[in-house]
Length: 287
Image 1 (cartoon, one colour):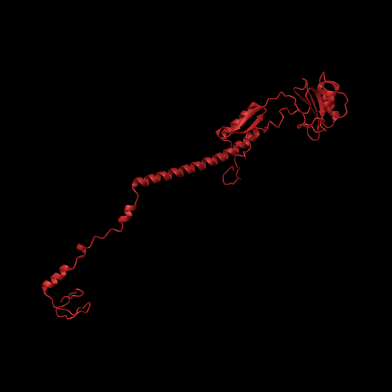
Image 2 (image 1 turned 90 degrees about the horizontal axis):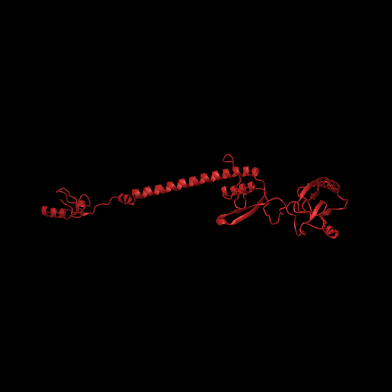
């Protein structure tokens, strides 16, 4: 017997369906065949099931794209490692060169416009010799223990020489007399001696104490030569100008400035205006 409700086949003697309990009605063989043929077969009529991994495989990149990404990533990694190595080397090398330069290159005058070229600039022009030290004009080479200086000129004030530093004015006059080989007159207070042809009025106006450094119109010449150096930055912009007493010091300063790419001052110290020094961490030997 065939159940018309659920399609279950039961025994011929059964009156009710064993599955759904529906009363069974006897049917002919042709009816059973027709009902069997009308039921769609899942394997023939239903659409094929899609592969769940097909989308995953379709989303995978092509081998060429994957290879290119790998090459780019490795290149960036190597470039970063190289840049870090160069930075550490330059930091270490800069410290070594700075320490060396501090010994080999003494500091130079940074502003030639405010620093006179002739350090012996206390005597007025045209004077043969002068003594001072207790007024406003000081000799930077004399210590506080020996503040009195004695300067003399053999060419009418064009070039000047030091007779030395002394503890008082009397010793300064004695030192000047010994240096010149002449008798220095006893003049009270800071003394000057005019060159031949000077009048007493000109001599009195040439008193050292009455001529502070800022009021002097002219400075005596000097035989020293100032070696000028210009330190340039990007695009040829002059960042600083300095004077050196020798060509070797100037050349060394320029070489150091160019070689270290402006990380050092010309006198060998770290250039804090253009480079901010970092504190030593102690993680790297020598730092």
